[in-house]
Image (cartoon, rainbow, N blue to C red; front, top):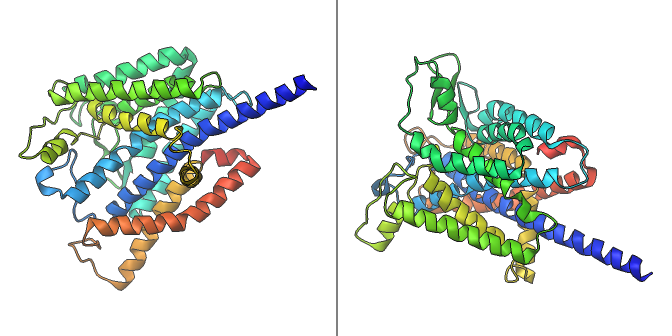
Amino acid sequence: MNSATDLKYQHSELATSLKSRINSIDALRGLVMLIMLVDHVRERFFLHQQVTDPMNIQETGDGLFWSRIAAHFCAPTFVFLTGLSAWLYQNSGNTTRPLQGFLFTRGLFLVVLEITLVTFSWFGGYHTIYLQVIWAIGLSMIALAVMHPLGRVPVLVIGLIIVCTHNALSFISFNENQSLYSIWTILHDRGYLLKDGFINIKVSYPSLPWIGLIFIGYGCGALYGKNTKPQSRQKYLLAMAGLTLLSFLILRGFNLYGEDYVWHTGETALESLKAMVNLTKYPPSLNFLLLTLTGTFLVLRFFECKLWMSNLGTKLQAVLVNFGSAPMFFYLLHLYVLLLMYKLVGLFMEPNYGDYISVSNITWVWIIALGLMVILYFPTKRFSQYKKMHKNSWTKYL
C-alpha cells in the first residue's frame, strides 16, 4: 500500500511539474501573441505613420518607437518556442507520430497558409503575396524536420553558427538576373521573387536566421525535460539571459559586429538608449536576436518564480495560457477581425490620412488592442478547451 501510495504521489508530482513547465511556455507564447495584436492594430489603423527597418528615430515618436520595440520580441520568441516545443513533442513519450513527419507537414501547412488565408486577411486579395513570419516559421520547421535526426547538440551548434555568422554574409548580393538571386532572397535578402506580373511575390522574412533560431530552440528543449529540476532550469535561464545581454552590450555597445546600423550617443540618455536598441529585423541581425532572446529567457524564468505564482499571477497566467495554447487560431481570428473592422469603418468614413483610415494617436492603437484582447479571449478560450478535450489531429495545426 505504501509503495502504491508513493508511486501515485510521484506520478502526481511529475504531472504537476509537467503542467507548470508547459504553462510557462504557453503563457509566454500568449503574451507575445497579445503584443503582436497591438502591432497588427498599428498596421491596420496607424499605417499613415509607417516605420522603417531600422526605424528613423528623428521621425518616429516615442510611443510608436517603443510600441514597435515591444513587437520586436514577438517573432524571435515564437520561433524559439517552436523549436523548444518540437523537442518536447519528440520526448513526450505519448505520441505515435514521428517528429519528422509532424514538422514537415505542419511546416508545409504554414507555408500554404501564408500564401492563402494570411495574405487575404491583410489585403483582401492576391495582387501581392508577402511571405512573412508564418512562411518563415514554416520553412524553419521543414529545415528542423530534415536536421533533427542529427541529435539535439549538433542541431544546437549548427543553429548557433547560423545565428552568429549570418551577418558576415551581408556583403553577398545578387541581382534579379543572376541564377542564385531567388535562393538568396529566400535565405538572406528581402526582395521580390516575382515582380510586375499578374501576381507579385515578395519575401519579407528571409529565412536563414530564423532557421538558426528554431535550431537553438530545439537545442534548449532539454531545459524543460522531465529530469531537469525547476531550480536548475531557472539558473540556466538566468545564465543564458546574462550571456546574451552581455554579448549584446559588447557587440552593440562598441559597434563591433552583428548589426549593420551603427548607433551613436544622443544628447540624452534616452536618445542614446533608443539608438542602441534600434536594430534590423528583416532579416533579424545577431544583435536583434541577442536582445530579444534576453527578454525571452528572463520572462520564461519569471513565469516559474514564486513572485509570479501568487494568486493574481496564477489568474493572469491562466489568461495568457488560453491565448498561447491556440496560437494559430488566435492569429487567423484577429487578422480577419481587423480586416472586417477596417472594411466596416470604411463604409462610414473616408480615408482621413492620405489613402488610409487611421486613428490620430498611438494611444488609440493600444485602446483598440486592449478591447480586442477582451473580445477575442472568449472564442480563443473555447477553442483551446475544445482542442484539449477532443485531441483531434487537425487541432494540432492551430
